[in-house]
Length: 123
Image 1 (cartoon, one colour):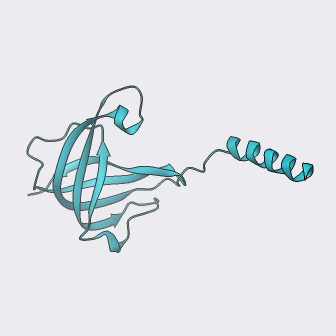
Image 2 (cartoon, helix red, strand yellow):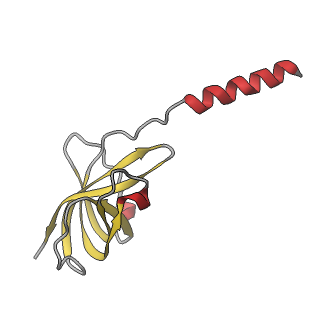
Image 3 (cartoon, one colour):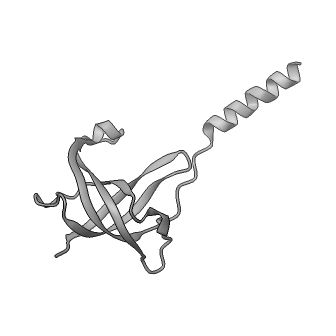
Protein backbone atom coordinates (compact mmCIF):
# COMPACT_ATOMS: atom_id res chain seq x y z
CA UNK A 1 0.00 0.00 0.00
CA UNK A 2 2.80 2.36 0.92
CA UNK A 3 4.60 1.65 -2.37
CA UNK A 4 1.44 2.46 -4.34
CA UNK A 5 1.05 5.75 -2.50
CA UNK A 6 4.69 6.73 -3.12
CA UNK A 7 4.38 5.78 -6.79
CA UNK A 8 1.21 7.87 -7.15
CA UNK A 9 2.85 10.86 -5.46
CA UNK A 10 5.93 10.55 -7.68
CA UNK A 11 3.72 10.42 -10.77
CA UNK A 12 1.81 13.55 -9.68
CA UNK A 13 5.04 15.45 -9.04
CA UNK A 14 6.50 14.50 -12.42
CA UNK A 15 3.24 15.18 -14.29
CA UNK A 16 2.90 18.64 -12.74
CA UNK A 17 6.36 19.68 -13.98
CA UNK A 18 5.96 18.43 -17.57
CA UNK A 19 5.43 21.24 -20.05
CA UNK A 20 2.89 21.08 -22.83
CA UNK A 21 4.13 20.48 -26.37
CA UNK A 22 3.62 23.57 -28.58
CA UNK A 23 1.79 23.29 -31.89
CA UNK A 24 3.98 23.01 -35.00
CA UNK A 25 4.62 26.24 -36.94
CA UNK A 26 1.66 26.71 -39.26
CA UNK A 27 -0.04 29.25 -41.51
CA UNK A 28 -2.91 29.46 -43.97
CA UNK A 29 -4.29 32.11 -46.26
CA UNK A 30 -8.02 32.61 -45.97
CA UNK A 31 -10.69 34.50 -47.83
CA UNK A 32 -13.97 35.22 -46.13
CA UNK A 33 -16.52 37.72 -44.84
CA UNK A 34 -15.91 39.69 -41.63
CA UNK A 35 -19.10 38.98 -39.67
CA UNK A 36 -18.31 40.42 -36.22
CA UNK A 37 -15.56 42.52 -34.70
CA UNK A 38 -14.91 43.73 -31.17
CA UNK A 39 -12.05 45.23 -29.18
CA UNK A 40 -11.26 43.47 -25.91
CA UNK A 41 -8.63 43.71 -23.19
CA UNK A 42 -5.83 41.17 -23.42
CA UNK A 43 -6.34 40.44 -19.72
CA UNK A 44 -9.63 38.71 -20.63
CA UNK A 45 -7.47 36.23 -22.56
CA UNK A 46 -4.96 35.88 -19.74
CA UNK A 47 -2.32 37.89 -21.63
CA UNK A 48 0.04 40.43 -20.05
CA UNK A 49 0.82 43.28 -20.38
CA UNK A 50 -2.63 44.70 -20.88
CA UNK A 51 -3.28 45.81 -24.45
CA UNK A 52 -6.14 46.00 -26.92
CA UNK A 53 -6.83 42.78 -28.80
CA UNK A 54 -9.41 42.53 -31.58
CA UNK A 55 -11.68 39.49 -31.87
CA UNK A 56 -12.82 38.98 -35.45
CA UNK A 57 -15.40 36.42 -36.59
CA UNK A 58 -14.89 35.38 -40.21
CA UNK A 59 -17.15 33.25 -42.38
CA UNK A 60 -14.54 31.22 -44.27
CA UNK A 61 -14.93 31.04 -48.07
CA UNK A 62 -11.63 29.39 -48.93
CA UNK A 63 -8.23 28.42 -47.55
CA UNK A 64 -4.85 28.20 -49.26
CA UNK A 65 -1.53 26.70 -48.26
CA UNK A 66 1.42 28.92 -47.37
CA UNK A 67 4.66 27.54 -48.81
CA UNK A 68 6.68 25.39 -46.43
CA UNK A 69 4.10 25.74 -43.64
CA UNK A 70 1.60 23.28 -42.22
CA UNK A 71 -2.01 24.24 -43.08
CA UNK A 72 -4.21 23.37 -40.10
CA UNK A 73 -7.38 24.57 -41.84
CA UNK A 74 -8.94 21.98 -44.09
CA UNK A 75 -11.66 22.18 -46.69
CA UNK A 76 -14.18 21.36 -43.95
CA UNK A 77 -13.82 24.89 -42.57
CA UNK A 78 -15.22 26.47 -45.73
CA UNK A 79 -18.65 27.95 -45.05
CA UNK A 80 -18.10 27.95 -41.28
CA UNK A 81 -17.60 30.91 -38.98
CA UNK A 82 -14.34 31.01 -37.01
CA UNK A 83 -13.01 33.42 -34.39
CA UNK A 84 -9.57 34.96 -34.83
CA UNK A 85 -7.58 37.39 -32.69
CA UNK A 86 -5.20 40.17 -33.73
CA UNK A 87 -3.18 43.00 -32.25
CA UNK A 88 -3.36 44.87 -35.57
CA UNK A 89 -5.70 47.85 -35.72
CA UNK A 90 -8.58 46.88 -37.99
CA UNK A 91 -10.01 49.04 -40.77
CA UNK A 92 -13.16 50.80 -39.48
CA UNK A 93 -15.21 49.56 -42.46
CA UNK A 94 -14.26 45.87 -42.18
CA UNK A 95 -17.68 44.53 -41.13
CA UNK A 96 -19.54 42.60 -43.84
CA UNK A 97 -16.56 43.04 -46.16
CA UNK A 98 -14.76 40.27 -48.00
CA UNK A 99 -11.19 39.96 -46.77
CA UNK A 100 -8.00 38.02 -47.38
CA UNK A 101 -5.59 37.34 -44.50
CA UNK A 102 -2.91 35.07 -43.11
CA UNK A 103 -3.93 33.00 -40.08
CA UNK A 104 -2.08 30.72 -37.71
CA UNK A 105 -2.89 28.64 -34.65
CA UNK A 106 -0.76 29.27 -31.57
CA UNK A 107 -0.92 27.13 -28.47
CA UNK A 108 -0.30 23.58 -27.33
CA UNK A 109 -2.21 20.37 -26.70
CA UNK A 110 -3.96 22.05 -23.77
CA UNK A 111 -5.45 24.76 -25.96
CA UNK A 112 -4.69 27.86 -27.98
CA UNK A 113 -6.11 30.51 -30.28
CA UNK A 114 -6.30 31.34 -33.95
CA UNK A 115 -4.48 34.58 -34.83
CA UNK A 116 -4.98 36.67 -37.96
CA UNK A 117 -2.65 39.17 -39.61
CA UNK A 118 -1.96 40.90 -42.92
CA UNK A 119 -5.69 41.61 -43.32
CA UNK A 120 -6.72 43.10 -46.66
CA UNK A 121 -10.20 44.13 -47.75
CA UNK A 122 -10.99 42.73 -51.20
CA UNK A 123 -13.04 44.54 -53.81
